[in-house]
Length: 554
Image 1 (cartoon, helix red, strand yellow):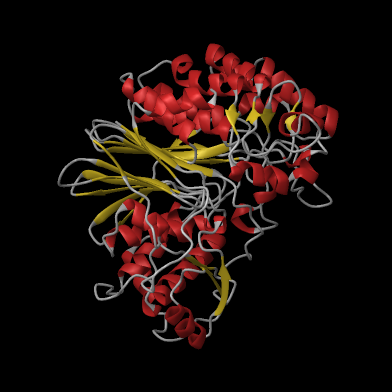
Image 2 (image 1 turned 90 degrees about the vertical axis):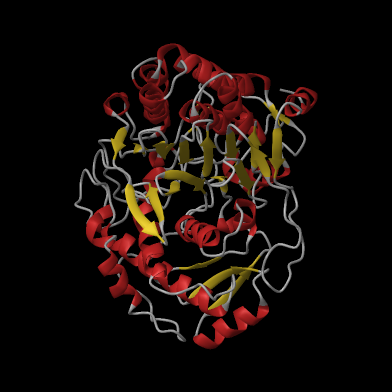
């Protein structure tokens, strides 16, 4: 789709696209100096990290599809137009809430370790050996089959079109390509895609991936079997055999997406439904449960006391996640115990009101993680909601394209641990922090939200929920508010530079080592979210200026 066609398409809907350069200054209260106008719509809405993916989802809603149809269309499309962060060579997790019956379900399409898992020199973080069994195609097709209403060929059509015709590269994507260019040019198929003339594609160039379009057409015609058992499986297996990868056709054929019960909690009267193990919903809800034990009714956003209590709650949620969470098909994850109100009170009692806690050592220190990954949210006319997060792990995953397929492959194998509940095993799904989440109140869906950001996903999600509930922010205000992050194994507190100086000074006196990052820093993810206004029923969406976020509605 060229620029003129895309511009014409936007005239039919309400759209918000996050700016390439966020506001430069912030008032003392900590909020952004210039907030982006929110998008409101009466019927349906899609929020994702790219306008073209949001438009793909909206196309399904406007043709009579439901929230699941729209989410699946947007998820396939975002893998085309944000190839650094996700795609059919990756994986993810989806949370669905059906408004009528009040049904909530999670679709786990996390990648899995292949059968051959011997790595005498340690787990690789790039290249063919780093590739785990991709789950995206299985997960999206399962969700569509069970909870959608439109045929797969219709839902995948926008992604095929975008791959075939191409799209204009944004400054964000151009910068990521440049930052990763040394690794990109080592894989010939990836280099042909992202630097067809020998130099990295730049902002304003058009990125086309006709091989990926052909792969998507095969999936549209043959369903998940085309990817896991057909010619695409043959191509992926041949790529691995030729270059020392561990993934085999048998690994692909045995893969299944899994329907799981979401994890659930409550925060100040709001019901929380989030992604279950092996991902970060447990940690998110535990953090919120701990924070709920403190009265924040008189706190201002980003006050020293609020930031301190939230940071200390984060540390405990992260520590318990590291100690207990793994693939529930391989380990017993004590979800009930971790999310009990009594346990939250016990953890909260450890927090001193005016001093930083010692390091909370309950598991392995966090590995360096990429800010890659992408999230999207959808609400339809009936109030059905989807929150979805998917990834290929690092930017451009393993830095490998399976030749002739256009598929960028993940490097998820690096996310296993040396020991504990996340230790490597054949067929096991590695844990990560993704935590797509839905909030409801009094039986009515209220918000769907998610973010990328690696280890910062859970902390950012906790802040978003707190901003919405404790401080009654709009979705856009909640997304744009300055962020901070504290880890269980560190005394360091990472903050955006818009954090009030009085707050950082007070926190330093408590013992925090303050690390100041950019004003709207990609380190903290790129959240998208939608709220249903309980009084008017209007859909109100927010997009993150830290990324190329876009909300569309009608």
